[in-house]
Image 1 (tube, rainbow, N blue to C red):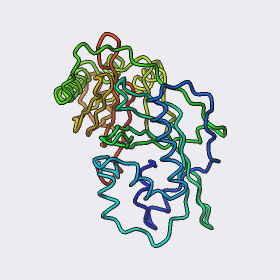
Image 2 (image 1 turned 90 degrees about the horizontal axis):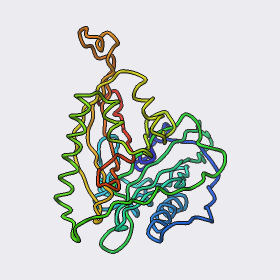
Image 3 (image 1 turned 90 degrees about the vertical axis):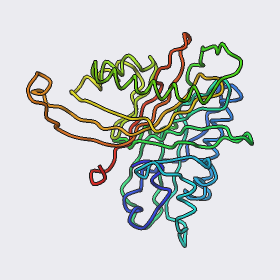
Image 4 (image 1 turned 120 degrees about the horizontal axis):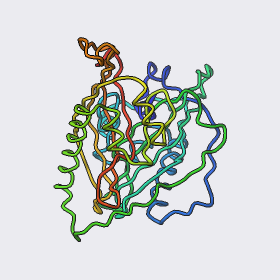
Length: 321
């Protein structure tokens, strides 16, 4: 269950959309953040407060960009979908809350992302079973200087992240130095989309595990349904090495910051788990198929190479593959 699925609550969706309750998370007081990163984190916290105070529908409409999307389960323009949906007669009996635990921002202060645990309180008489997860939001500063969400994604976790408020820490600042004074953002977007295709070629030639090891940053994060985020490269390596699989994907959109040090892509993917016999040279058979959408944050290293800083997938329900 993903955080953004709560935007379009109906009586049917409400029965499956209730996540785990946790008390409101206390703010960390001693954060040594740059002014730009602090403004991003506070925008995320304001988003969460508005969700608690006004409800999911109003908060998502307020904090999403006009072109912002979530996955319901396909990419959906959030504000357009809210405009087209009939508002409920009464506010649904739930409170959705979350707290950023990790964040990063471009040197230009125009693009960034946050992630952390989320919870929902069921205030209905039924007190439905608890669920929980990790949200992931990409934010972009708008022409008026306000931060707005451009992509929202998330994964359910097998248990609450913690009974204690999460500690917050920031990503290591980018050490990349842009050589030219003016960045051709359109050209850099195209270059990042092409890099996705190079990534795919490597996955086809060398296997998914080797490709991810090569393209992911040392401090990368991997978010997958039903598990806690992996935040160490060794753990990510072990995840991909655990079972043979093939994965294909196609980027739909790419964007980069004005400082050309942080960017993101999203697109469709298909995952196949192959049998041991197939990998040993016998006839290839697909043991399982998963389709859905991926979102990746890319960050430049000091030497100018793009590396994946965060990778998440949003599988389609079986009936929509």
